[in-house]
Length: 145
Image: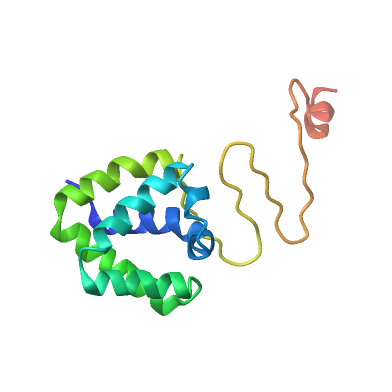
């Protein structure tokens, strides 16, 4: 069974970075990516219900509005809950657009790096790269003497 709240969250985190592009009629550009298929599916479904269509239009006018984002997510959840076929279609498209799924929470100073090859340095940190093999630390050297 598909977990609707997780599907809403994944769909939102996949689409949200592209909203400014979509809002400025850059749909053709994102259409070249997997996220374009997700957007087309969501838009097609939202166009079938007046409240959902209005939520989508409002979000595109002000993509940074937390209120409009919330209304969009509520409408998306309703649509997914009431239409298992839509939920299944969306769940099949998301992995290709989202790639590997990562989730992290940072509390306080620090940094989070996600995806293969990502690097992060927290407040006051120093980035060290490379690897070490076959080394013995100073304490071990003293104990061997």
